[in-house]
Each structure stands twice: as C-alpha cells, then as structure tokens.
Image (cartoon, rainbow, N blue to C red):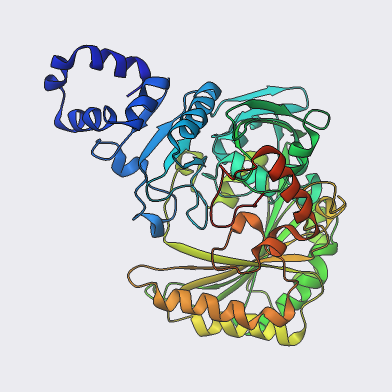
Length: 486
C-alpha cells in the first residue's frame, strides 16, 4: 500500500472489512508499530508478512536464500522515500539493507528481521550527449535496451537482471570492458543517501572521497545510491566468435588462450569456459569453449583468432556480425530480447584473480577438477581476460584495485536437492588452486566463506576506504557480514 492508500484506510476502518483476506492481513500488520509509521511516511509501497505480495517480494535471485524473512520490504517510489526510510530506521533503531537487483551472492540484500529498502522502482534512463543518468534500480538489460535506442552503451556485465547500482559500485566487468573500462570507471556522478538520511550528489569535485569509494568500494557500504550518471560510448555492430575443442585438448586450449587473450587488442574481450554439464542431460559431456566480442570487422577478428583456431583440432569455430543489442541478448543467454527476464537459480560461486600465467600444474588442476565433476553434477569455471582499458587505470585512482590481473576465474556450481556434493566440489577445487592465484577476489562475486575478504576485495585501497567509512557512517548504520568497518 502507498502512503495515500494507508491514510485513506486508516480513516475508514470499516472499509477494511470489504477488502480481500490477504489485503486485510497486510493492512493489519502495517498498522502495528514501527512498520505502520514507515508506511505513513512513504509514497511507495510497504510489503509485510501476511500480505499477498510478501512471499514474492522477499525473494532474492538465488533460491538458497528463500528462507530469509525480512520484517518488511519498502519499495521506494523516489529518492525522497529512500531518505525517509533511513531517517525512520535511525529513529526506530531498525536495521535497513538496500536492494537493487537482489543478486548478492551471499544474500546480503536481505536478512531475518531487517527492512529492505528496495530501489527497483527507481529505474528510469535519461540519455544526454555522451552521458546517461540511470535510476539505481534499473536492471542491466533495460539499461542496455534504452541506450541502444540512441546508438550508445556503457560497459557492464552480461546477466540481464543484475541491478545497475550494485554492478557499478563493485566494479562491473563484461564484454565491452577491455575497450571502455569497468562500469565504475565510467561513473561520472551519483546521488547517494548517507547514514544520516541526507542525500548527496557526488562527483570528482563534490564529495570526491565518497565518489572515489563508490567506484569499486562495493554496494551497501557507504549509503543507498538512488541514481548514477555514466559516460556512454557510440556502438553499432560488433563481431563475435565461439570456439570449442575436444575435452582431451583442454590443457593446450587453456594454455593458448591465457597466452593470447589478456594481451589482445583492446577491442577484443574474450572468455574461456570449462563446463561440467548436468548428468541428466542426454549425451552429457564436459566442454571447453572460448567466446568473445570484437569492436571491428569479422574478417579482422578471424585473423586475430589464429593463435586459438590453430591450437589443437577445434570441433567448432564460428564468427558472426551482430547488432550491439543482439550481442547483448546473445551473451545474456536469452532466446530474444523479450525472454531476457528474471530467471532464478540455486547457485554458489567463488572467485580468483590470476596475476601471472598459470603453470602446467595449475592448468591440470583446473581441468581435472572439472573432469571429476562431470557425471556428478553441474559445475563450471568462467575465465575472463583482463588487460586493455581495465588495466590502464592506476590501482589507487578508484576503489577498484584489480588493475594488474591477467585473468579472473569464477568457480560456480548449481544443484537441485541436496547441496552437499556441489559445495564440497566447489570448496575443494578452490582450495587446490591456492598456490597458483594472486590472493585477490572480485567483490561483485562476494563470498561469505572468504576469510581474507578485506585484502582480497580491496588490497591497498582498504585503509582509505575505512577512513571514508568513518567520515560518512561512523556508527556502521550500513552493515553486513563483509561490510567495510569504520
């Protein structure tokens, strides 16, 4: 119910009896105590236990967190609503957590007893010359689609339902990043509600320290962002490729890819995937594939890929020229633009950065790990090439410290039923790779089991981030298990 609806119902108690049962329960719950006071404050809706929408409103992207039961979900209709939620929480001494896309790998955008400040209704996209201002709750595919109408884009990830705010605050790496940098590198201004409920506009000259922290310092640490202004880049068509090798050639394919991809021209972003498929799938087998996007003609891409296509005996080599938005749909794994909607998963992941080429022993460890998983469940390793525009930014220029990596690795697993086998495999392979990796991890793949997370996410930038946290949130109003402490 929104604020006007709440006032109307409170003034006409007799009308409640005429409501459907689920609406009567939601109204009764909202009228009780602090949540009732919140509902009176907001232009947006407050969803509470017992209400008909609560069962879906409380859910995050990952089904592992379906057991979380927040006290309420406050759908903020505008930036003023976000300020009201924060000030209300201060008065009532209630823990508030922000939620944009709800994709936190650790479920940190919810929790038992918390009030979720959901900004998904702040989703507008306004395009001006060389820039776009985007509501913090906009989903990534919606942003790409709106920008494509103007022939421009921003560098971002590939998952279509990720919220733009969380992506940008933690860095943001995807198929355009070696050419245009991270999402955070393209951030030019943002509006953020601090722990005292005050809304600030931050850029390179206004609240510059806080602006620096928000370019890679992670979502949920310093406040609730309500909109972001990002640099845009003209795009038209791109060339894409896919290569698959026989699984027996996985070691040499991985070795060839790591020697090539991080050092390729900026225009090419490239990935390598090692996948153990669902054993229930007919003909299930392990796969090793490489794919990528090139800002240039398909003929040039074919020549550029020679170090990969001449390795081993590829099963499949394809190149295509696509409209940029069609490429976005392709990398999202959607059939078409209309199907790029929410798809929930039961999912767990870990991540690493590689700062020097993997040895033959390290490569064998990765390949044998996926081989062992095949036939026992779904698991995958996703390797992304860094370099290019990502690595030309100095480590201290933004809070995103991962500027000397060659490759990132995301270890993932999915399951239905018991999680034991999947999580054991994930932890085991991750542990085996400790001698070969840099000790850093990607904060957007936040990992609740990571003991060294402060160094892994932020490295030498951590002391400055801690100082900024003290200046804007001394008492830790915005907090979660891996939040930066004052």
